[in-house]
Length: 421
Ligand code: NAD
Image (cartoon, rainbow, N blue to C red; front, side):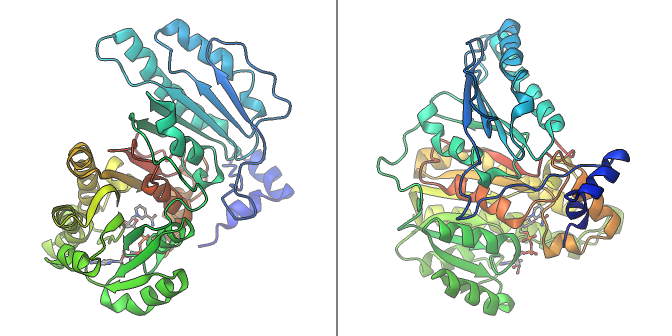
């Protein structure tokens, strides 16, 4: 699992050699830890078209307000604002561009605002040194506070090239930003190991009482983790027809956060794929997600203020040879999110979003043959694989009580993979 190339390029001879050969230059990413909970340096706030304040020191992050940009002249202001500072942004720093929703009645505004997307994604691909670039389309800055805090923190180290839409809305008045999930219950499927275990740990760090769900053969691992986190284990195959009802019965006081993480692969090209390899993937990754979501909404187990975070994959967005079953299941998750999100919010007060991981260093990807693994690791703007905690931090942001205005989003945690948009 160790990324030896990343370690090698972190040394002076390694840097010299790989640079000379024109090879990828991954930078070690600064991730959240109790000792380093914030970016190292100031956040520089710029507004397109307004004079820029002189930064006292190289900024750790730049936020550029381009919400008012309505035409091509306005885009020149975006260039003028970022061109002089982009070089000085610290290693593993952040650029966040604030945009506005596209106006269907004004194609000049829509063109200019859509242009910000191409701008952001292009800058993400060239900026290097572990720095990320994201675009947030918002109408109400207060509703985007949890999103901006996430993007401007070490928690978003592997999220780049994303366009995130934040609607209007109000968050809870008194919020403990250190332990935002205190007093809330979160259930994570497939949480005995891998990404799910990291999600459980991160939600517990944020104060949640966590229910670690996994298949009966993984019960011992699920129990160990649950005990460590002060939560509970639930041994249950999520494909059981009554899985939703059984979860509801196990949680008579209700559930605040539901994370659909359990997933499997059964790779083979379609010509060689019998139904026995197709069905289980669609069952675990999609059918059970649909069934349990329906049951937990219908029983009222998930109610006002609830959060659903499903797990897609870049394979579902870009497609992947040998994964017609997996790609179909993960694209299905995206369809579920897009359709259900507005209705779930209107009818139940529950948001529905998805994370779409790219190459994440887990047992699943450690089993991939070396050359394909190396390609997967390097084919993204950060030139390295992500860690389970990167998906977990993104999930925690979407699960946040103050993220009620983030709904129907599919956020890739992929270091801006070259695959897919
Ligand atoms: P993993 O195989 O390490 O863990 C998956 C967990 O799900 C296991 O503990 C397993 O027992 C559990 N599980 C499987 N079937 C289940 C069922 N029927 N009921 C309950 N639990 C079940 O996988 P991972 O790499 O941690 O992936 C987690 C999620 O992220 C999956 O949905 C996967 O498709 C997705 N994903 C992973 C990557 C990656 O690079 N690892 C990339 C994209 C998406």
